[in-house]
Image (cartoon, rainbow, N blue to C red; front, top):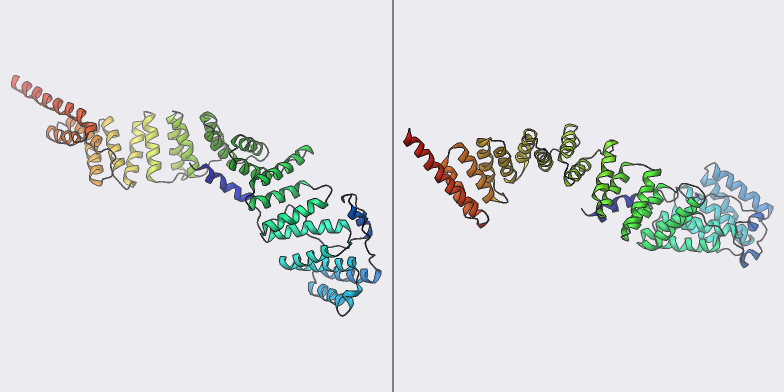
Length: 443
């Protein structure tokens, strides 16, 4: 099994998409940033804190408030017209940098509200281009810029913007580290992605919070990608503890298989089966093979048989063959035969008819054995036609068809692999014929 391919499927579920990138982050909101924001305790203590932010004059504040009210009422055209009026003529030149930043900030929010992400990004970039705006305003806007790059799947631009934000903020939260990890994941910078998602998980754990399921999933994929099976397995155990789902039992089973720990591999799948979580044909077939590998064929047969009855296991040749093989190994020949018959009937070549002939021979159903093997040889594709002819010869012999038996054994003897055994049978057929002649002569 290609585990790398198999494990990549869940990883797609944690990848950032344009529709969901903002779900775990603060959705961009618009609001006037007052003078106090420049003194935010969360702002990094840097030289930039000493910037002197121009005052927001009352007349400008009133116009912005009017535009904000229209925006909140979803009258976006009216809000845009009010902002346009503030910039018409010499209006733009009359605004200081802080006032202009607030105008662009509201423009950006209007664009974002109608899902014009490139337009919103353009205006948010204009916000941070204004000199001497409050540091808190710059920090919040740069985070929003990073988000909008991710929404547009401009992953490297998003990473760069987010790193600028990290350089400014004093206390980055776990969600920000995850967003950065997702960006690195999308650009296939997996080591950096893993470092950041690990940081986010540890932050939550240190605070006594439960990390989110998709965080563990991203970490799980990244561990597996770098060949760290032990860490991937430990992460899946956490997922089973906090977010118990079928997929994690199955993934744990696969990883134990990768570690050659057959007993735990079986135990994981068996636990999921007992809970009724295995609801796909491939799940039940895998479960059956694990039982067979553990040399417990009876439960393997029961799993496939019940799955076929429930309509879960697909009715195709290989699955019927699996059930028949399991029943046969469990010494349940009467149950094995119907499964092998169905398997042979659905097969494209004659191999399964040859195997079915063996089953019939074991059950002393010699005529059926002859019919099955003959059909298999006629259909073609039998892997060991020499062995099939040996079985055919034995079936004919038990029916007393000595000439047909001799013909089958001679054909089998043409293959060096069966030559010695076939010649022994030819001698035995001749001696049996002589014995019968002698008995008749004595009568």
